[in-house]
Length: 314
Image (tube, rainbow, N blue to C red):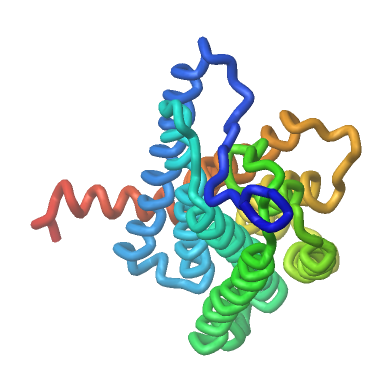
């Protein structure tokens, strides 16, 4: 007890998903299957890119990092969710909650920046095909990879440190299946205005600006195609950019709808469903999107399996 007769909580209760008890086992199996699919699918992409020399290009370098980010992003929340669905004691410690929040922000932001790097790579490949290898030099590719890791580290650490200074003394029930930043702020008995201001400013920098950069890249791509319209050029552009555009739509559609366009009518159930979309569904779908719509990935899969099946063939 403190001087104000308020209990300082050292752990939080995660309410989890709003699922009826009789359906809990069914959803447990469903989410377990989705998580295993996410892990295996993204690992397959990483292994294929590492093993096949044909995929040692900037585009697939970014894709391998995106797959790693998706794998980790899902792993931040899914194991705890699966554990809580089979537990009668779904608590998480204060330190564990902050740790989960840090890595959730880190890998979420990392995916955000990697999508920008991939958009720029597609812009250079389509608008400047003859200068592609010169522009996308190893030095620039390394910079486009290192910069997101550095920026996301500082961004996630900033929010985590600001959250760590708050006190939680009125309630310890988080109406979510993970330690979401907005859910934690609602529980705090401290002044959260600084946190809310930083979230508003950094949200614009980390979400809106990368999204606008992606839109600008594709606007330039469309403009370049329209200058020399041809069925072959249009098909090639859609083949090159279709997978990336699908992933961008899935990721930004749910994140912007949940965090940047909040509604007073948004129920806890609706917010939870949208959170499941970008934390569970999107990381699971990305391997299918990039493998089923990509000739290079399907070709690499065939070459790797043929090499394993006929190791001594010429």
